[in-house]
Length: 437
Ligand SMILES: [Zn+2]
Ligand SMILES: [Zn+2]
Image 1 (cartoon, rainbow, N blue to C red):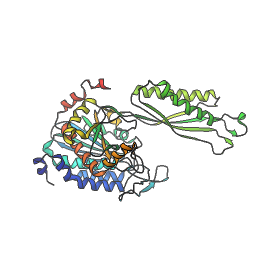
Image 2 (cartoon, rainbow, N blue to C red):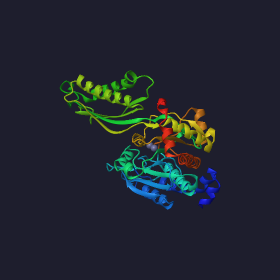
Image 3 (cartoon, helix red, strand yellow):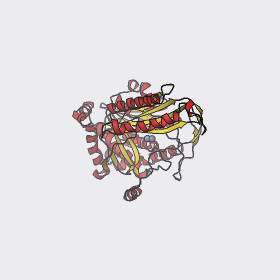
Image 4 (tube, rainbow, N blue to C red):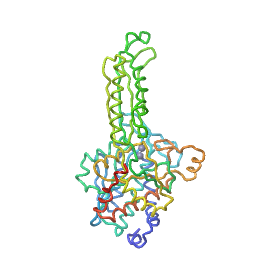
């Protein structure tokens, strides 16, 4: 690979084909060696060394295992492209020849399987391919390209840790941020754009309801926390149905309910684990307040000896896709991938801690990368079934077209942004786009 062949032939396909073997090799390696959130040491070292070999100035250990790779190329804006580094405690059941067999100890010492069940391995491979194309074609853009490998996305803590570790002070502040996520809700070869709110905010809440334990045959001497918790679960379901304005996106899910040890003992306490998803900050605030009000009132109504404890332990804002930026980059992606391969995506209620970067004042473009094998996608659509979603043991993106498209899309987006001036980008992201919220 020489720099000149890219400079003379701007055809993205040819450029992507040239870097594909290197990107695919990284994909296979990472897929077979996944690491859990905040433990992505091998992954980060591997990615950092490959970016360094391409000429990037790489800083490691930013917010734990995070990496920041910078390629300066004259004056112009600073544009950030982000990938996640982490995998999940899921046992892979895809049956692929390169399926993960890795097991490790999690943070509580349990032996768990590990799998790149969210496709972050594909994001890293795509970022490497993009990094190579951009490094080989420096006459096609100007400015500062910043590639970041963010740890611990699955525990929605890595972006926050990078920011707390001085990400915005130690490195140039990006004028624009870009990220993608692969999924089976679009066929491989396509990308999807959801302007405005595209991913929800997430709040994890742990509720402990205190009662008074005793013999299962003598309820009159107890305050049964299981009954209080059961009523609480049902009452919490009235928040979205009765309190939130119809049409506002909101979810309240009780994902676990733990209490008791034996059928004839009334326990002392019960614990509920919730996840709360919304788009708008005011709806989020309303729901969190309602959860606290209902939980306390149910305990009070039952004569509980103590007020329940309500702990919020993991949270992230919604991911907001700058609408004017999305509109501009949609045209760019249509030109690069073909009009039919760029679709309007549905906003999702899943969450993503990329939101921390948006919150820090980095206007962003976050898009969906199709991962489904096109024939399987078409068959599922006809049958009305769904292909295995991210986090499933069966999640397996159609790597060849998805990775080619990921690189082509990232390169097109970065080149568009890195041919503008920082002022132009400021104007795009600060026009009256907020009316679309
Ligand atoms: Zn995930
Ligand atoms: Zn993910």
